[in-house]
Amino acid sequence: MPLAATSLRDVPWTVSWSGEQAFRLQPSADFAGLVELDQKQAPGVGEPQFAAMHVRRQRRGMIDLVCHVCGTPTPPRDRYVFPAASGGLVTLHDGSQQYGLNVPPMHRACAVRAANACPHLMKVDEPPLRCGRDDGRLIHRTDVTPGLEAIARELPPGVEVVFSCYRLYGPEFTAKVLAARAAWERAVAERRRR
Ligand SMILES: [Zn+2]
Image (cartoon, rainbow, N blue to C red; front, side, top):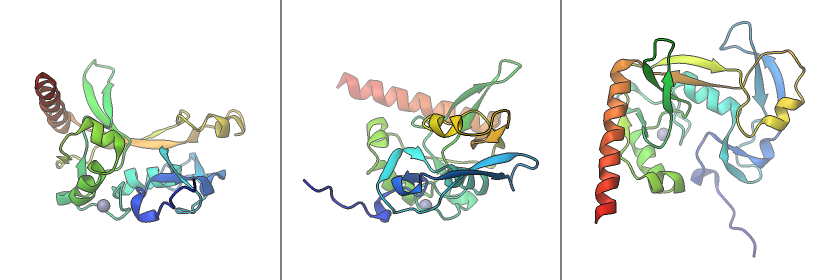
């Protein structure tokens, strides 16, 4: 049976496509003095690979706070994340924990659309959380992004390569995330009891 053609409209902006599987190294314009992995840009070509984020679009989304779903900038008043479905707590040297997130933010309308279309978000089933004044600290990652191990093996040895980046949020937004996660856990427990 032929697969239904997937249109660009139905696929989040950051998702990688099978027609984009070409990579190269280039000097990073965002992280001075470092080399980054760049990926061919041809969204809509081939099949979407929902489990993988396009390396260049992931970084642009995080750096420029561009919407994960539609690929246009998110203004501070319309910038949302899914705190239980994405991100995680990072333990710092002093033992404190801060919320780190590698999925670009979303407009509220885009978050609602994603919540009704993405199997992972539908399973978690949580309301989107509005970002606060804290834009987080942008941090680059030079460890290999899961799924890119084969690409990493072909890179020249001894070169530190920027694969992705994330934002690490301060105590105020971290507390909001923890409260949202606790509320979500209570709602899940409530649903199970019924
Ligand atoms: Zn959007």
